[in-house]
Length: 394
Figure 1 (cartoon, one colour):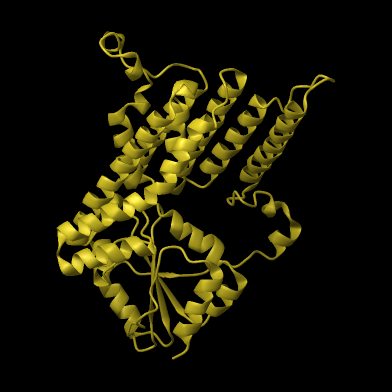
Figure 2 (tube, rainbow, N blue to C red):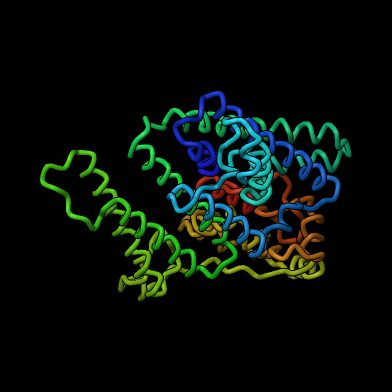
C-alpha cells in the first residue's frame, strides 16, 4: 500500500502542503479501516473471507489498469483532472487530479484493503475468530477498525514524508513523479501476478526494468563533464537494464522464478533439479476425512490459493528450505486448494474455523488435530522448523 498512497501524494506535485498530505493519508487509512471493520465483521459472522471473492482475473485486472492509468499520468502522457465545467465552480484547492480528491482517496483505501491484502495473517485471524465465537459484531468491528488504524500509522508517516521528499520545482520533481509512476506500474504487475501464467509477470517485470533503464539514460553516452549524480543514475539504469535482460532471457529459456531467472541455464541445475514439496490435494471434507483415516504417519494440511501471495512465499522461502524439506519427509502432506472459494472450499475452511489461506493444521497418525500447533500467515523457515519438530514429537 505504500507506493499507492505515496503515488497519490506525489501526484499533486510540489504545491501540496504538509497538512493536505496528512489529510489525504488519514482519508486513505480511514477508508482502509472502515473496510476492514465491515468485511471483518461479515467474515466473522458468515465464516468466510469476503475478499477472496474479488481475487479473480477481471477484478484484479481492472484494479491494475487503474494503477497503470495513474502511472501514465505521472509520466506526462495526460492529466487526470475534473471536468472543465466542474473545475470552474470549485476553488483552486480542489483543482487536483481525481486520484487525490477526498472521495477518491477513501475509495482507494477501501479497495486496497479488499484487493491488495486478501491473505489472512495471525492477528487478523485471531480477531475474526473472536467475532465468530462471541457473536458480538459491534465489539469485533471496533477491534478490527482499531487494528486497521494501527496498521495505517506507518502509511500516514510515509504519506507525510512523501511530501517532504519532493524537491523544489524543476527537473528533480519530474524525476520523483516518474519514480513513483514506476512503483505504481510495479503494483499493477504484482496484483495480477497470482492469476496469470508465470511467464507473463516475468516478461512484465523485464519490460518495466528495461524501459526504466532507458528513462535513466542507460543507453545514452554521458558527456565528459557529467556531474556525479548523472553518473550515479546512469549506473542505476545500467543495473536495471542488466536485470531486465536477465529476466527476459530467463523467461524465454523456461525459468519461472523472477528471483533466479538464469538458474535454468546452469548445467548443474538442469542435471540435479531441486525437488518440489509434493502435496496430495483434498477437495472436500469427505476427502480429508478419508485421507486422515488411512494415514500411517503424522499429517500436515496446508490451505492454499493461487491468489494468496503469502502462500507462495511459504512455498518459495519456507517449504523449499533444505532443513524444512527434510523434516517434511516425516509427514503425509495434504493440501486444500481454496482458490475457487467454492462451497466445498468454504466447508473445509469452516471445519477448522479458518477464514482464508494461508493456514496449516497438523494431525497425529490417528487423525486427531495436534492442538496449539496451527500456523496462520507466513512463517519463516527457522520458526516453521520448530513447529514441525513439535508436531513430530508425539
